[in-house]
Length: 233
Image (cartoon, rainbow, N blue to C red; front, side):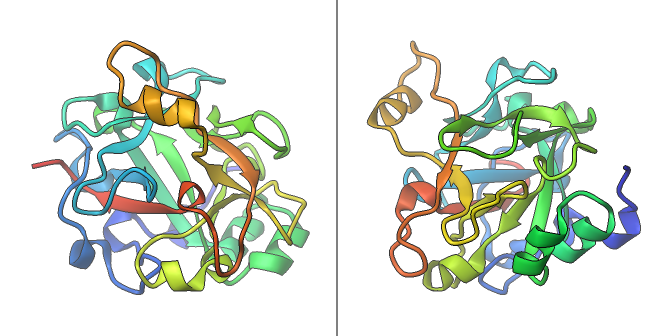
């Protein structure tokens, strides 16, 4: 089922977890000039900050194909594999469009959510960051058609980490989760992954989902994410 665009806001009007618009809080990002302010970067609290995200979500090798992994890669304004355009709305909007279940809507309906569409050089290709199957422990993030229900929707789960949300960091829960006490959330955990993220010789480790831990007061940095808009200066 396709999404009706009028239900969703664009990147330019995204309200972040802390209650400020992106333009009010952000100073550095990684999109190419061709994608510009439409593009969003997702970075890990474990590795960077809004002023210096350092590493951002990237399509591995930049290949726009179903099943291609997403990884963390050093932020660059020339790497089109880092170009993503978001579609933002409340979880209830995605439910109305048939993209999340009634149970997910019951738990998260008033929270914001997003689909993150791959758009090298600003050209959206119909593939969104998601999961190949209903979320399970350590499943890797990959590209899939944006109309794939549940698995291509990411919930900005401010309710499970309210203190960090005020600082602009929040868990990103996959819309296919069936565990609502410890939902499956985007995760950067491994020491091996950290080392690879800093190496120019080894491929970076894939981003994965794991059950959210420490919620609501002690969510680890590897499960907290921030967002930037626009081009690195």
